[in-house]
Amino acid sequence: MFTGIIEEVGRVVAARKRPELATFEIECHRVLDGASVGGSIAVNGVCITVLAAEEGRFRFDAVPETLARSNLRLLEIGDSVNLERPLAVQSRFDGHIVQGHVDGLAEIAAVDMDGESLRYELETSPNIARYLVEKGFVALDGASLTITHCNGVRFGVALIPHTIANVVMGAKGPGYKVNVEVDVVAKYVEKLVGDPGTREFEK
Image 1 (cartoon, rainbow, N blue to C red):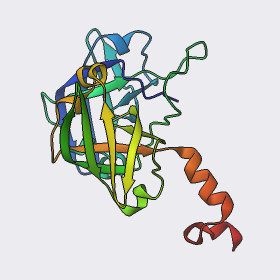
Image 2 (image 1 turned 90 degrees about the vertical axis):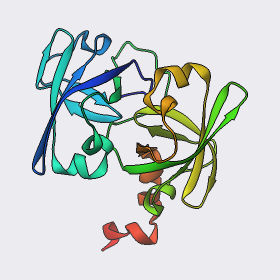
Image 3 (image 1 turned 45 degrees about the vertical axis):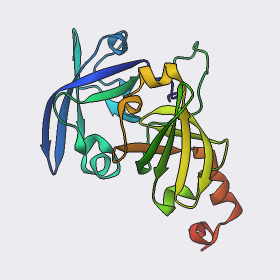
């Protein structure tokens, strides 16, 4: 489990992409502290399994399901990625519950300055938008953010200066596709109240 508090921005140094499997190597430093083969790291909000870890980099694979749902399929050598280690038992819980299970993508539609902060307008699919609520949580490329407004398939977030400087999205503009993970609690509530689209359990 993760909290959506990005610890480090890493860099893609190798990318071998095939339809059946993609392999990436990420250059980084901080998240390698305590990392081991078989352990987990969130890469742009995607929980991956570390296959190899050495000084200054780690390697992981991404299967077709992961590639289809996330922006990992778009990564090229030199691209930056958000990184976070799993939550340790003794850690403070500063963000929100992030599983590292990406639901899909949203595209940045507009970016505007608001004092020293940035306001982002994003567009996503109806299947994701249904779980977004004003002042609720959303993980974008693994970063825990508060939703400022929702309007159909569009929603907004605001980045403070610290976040702008420490996440990939802070340097991105319209057209960039971010990974989206919605609040898992919203999905459980929908299932339990028997939304018409999720009533398989009643059959």
